[in-house]
Every structure is written in structure tokens, then in C-alpha cells.
Image 1 (cartoon, rainbow, N blue to C red):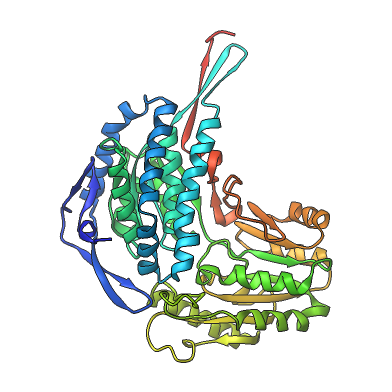
Image 2 (image 1 turned 90 degrees about the vertical axis):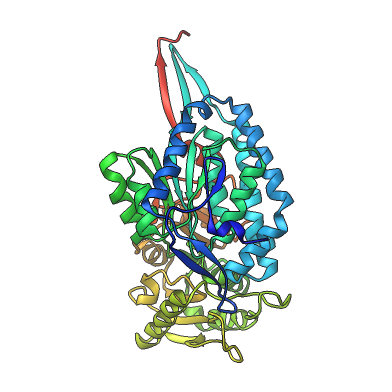
Length: 476
């Protein structure tokens, strides 16, 4: 792709120059090279994008569901035509291995658009209850703030259902990984999205994100990011009583039951933890194993971790790329050292770059054993390829420790299906994955506790962007 539009914003159907001159270099984290300069918006830029969305809402909200679905189908077609460009953009901005960029990152945007379209076609936009007609309609102008770790996954999970519901919107992608967001705006333009329905302004959270969250003409904020930033978004939104939907941090438990195939379950858990270089909010970072089989589990985890090939994303043999930035690299390094200092057993990995790597924000895939649930590495979201293996003496104890966290985004259980279901019912998490199932883009995704509120994916996401109106007396 070309990076010409990195210096512009997409507002009211046009690529426009920013009102200010602030920019930031976009780094390829695999090489530490700057690949472009992204314009950083101001409060004034956010204001004009919101004004465009507000002006467009009255007309777009009257579009029929069929017409909105047809628009989404055109967006999907344009996305598919640029599929390889999306994969390349995300490999560049994130350092993702090309296979992962194609098969996971670019695929996520595609499949969520497909799922939203299917859900919108089956959605009950109106229904009668006695003498009342219930109508679900778009909530209004939406501020969409998306992260760098799954760029197209989160953009598609917000833009798709917002359009399906008849909302207008302003998107702020992560300024750290803006290439794919710019490409998505180009898709929306090519698909014929009406002026003002979709707008995009790049910028920082403290400036553009804060203004979008607090603006009185914004009806809803949909935010994905850290719990710390989520608190700031909710606080900014509170004075105008906006709806706030948030998908925040996680510290997901993975309970390996005694009935599980230990070798397969542990190896699968390592793979799940290390996917996307560990930069997934629902990564299974706390693995609970029977204490009596700890040594066996650690041997399997060590072997699985040491099969990971870290390096150049363009090398087909590479299975793990770098972390996103030096800031994230330093954070992960500090937490690995904290694990060592607090007495966890370093099974493999550790501080520093992998052997032979001298540039890029690459880390060593790391496994800690004999971790206790009160250690820092078991409490804090690390957001890197670091697995904590914790022993338990009974399933009840495993469940108690799994729930002993401020987070509740996801959880994992391996073993006999009936037993796994019973354990899953007891876990305080929004999505519990049993025996490493395929990704279900029609299952609701969202968290309990400090992992957020609201749900995304398919019809669950559409509901979040709708208001419900009751026309009482409309007739039986």
C-alpha cells in the first residue's frame, strides 16, 4: 500500500488535511525502522469529524436494514479485494509473521464483517408484544477507539455492527499501528459509504480519544484497550451519560483438569498463550495443573516453547514476531525479571532478546513454573509471551484461584467435556473455551469485572449499538 493518506484524516467523505501539524513516526517493530509519519489530530479535528457524523445521522438512520446490509456487503467486497494489502500493512505495523498476518489478523476483519452481515439479516429489528411495537434503532453518533494488537478484528467488530444498526461514527485507530486503519477508510470510501457516516481521525488517546469520549454530540463510546485507559474513557463519558461499551484487560486462567490429556493440553496452552506474541487480551496466561504433575507439565511446556521460531516476519519458518514497541518490550522485560526476583522457577526463556537477534523488539518465549497466584506475574497483564504455570491440589482450589483476579474476560478448561462444562459454569469470565475450540465469531465476546462491559461479535455487537423504542398502543 501507499502511505499518502497517513498524513490526512477521512472526514465527511473526503481525505482532508489536519488542522494542526503534529505527526508521529510509524515504526516497524521488527526492524525499528520508521515506515511513515502519521498525522496526530487535535480536539478541533475530532470536533469536525463528530459534526460530520451528527449531520449524517438523521438521513442514514432512516435507511432500511436491507440497504444497510447491502452497504456492508460492498465494504466486505472491497476489503476482500485488498486482503493481501491488509495482511502486509499489519505485518509492517505490528511485525506479525506474514502467515499470521494473513491467516489471523486479516482474516479476523473479513470473518467479522461476514458474521455481522449474517447476523443483521437474521436480526429482529421490530417485534410486536401485545399492543406494543418494539423497534431497535441506531443509538446515534458513536466514537470507536480501537487498539494496536488486533487492528482489523476490532475495527470490523465496531464499524460493522454500527453500520448495521444505522449509526454514524468516528473511528480513532491506534496511532502506533495506523496503516491498516487508513486502508480500511479507503475501503469505506470505495464502497460508497455516504459522507459523514464513517469518519476517521488518527491521534493520541489523551487528546483525540478524550475529546471523543467527552463530546456532548457523541451518544456512545466503544473502546478496546487497557483497563486503566478504560477507566479514563468511562470517566470522560459520565457527565453526558453516554453508553460506554468496553473490552479491556485480561489474565485468563487455563485449567488443565485431571481428566485431560496433559501433554496435549499443556502444549495447546503454550500455543494459545504465545499466539500474536502474547499480545492478546484473552490469552491463557495462567495455566493451572495438578500439583502432582507439575514437573511433567513443565517439561511439556518447555519443549513446546522452545519449538517457537522467533525472527524476521518475512521468513516463512518464523512463527513469532516482535512486541509492538520499545515501551512494551521494556514492560515485558521488567515483568520477567519480577518473576525471577519473586522466586518463580524459570523453565525457559528469560530476559533479553533471543540469541542472535540484535534489533527489533523481540523477546524470548518464557515459561515460569511453580508460580503462586499472589506473584506479580500471576496478577498483572503482561501482554507478551510469558506463561505462568500454577499448581493445584483440587479442582475446587483451581476454580478459586482462577477467579481470584480483578479480570474476567476469558477462561479455558481442558478435560472431560461434562466436567469442563461444570467447571466453566463456576468461572467468572465472559467467554469460557473448552478443549481449545475453533474461534466462534457468533459467540458473545466481552468481560466480567474489570475486563469491561458489553459484548461484541455478530448480533451481540449489533445490540450494543441499538436503542430500544416501545410504541405503546400500536395495535395488536
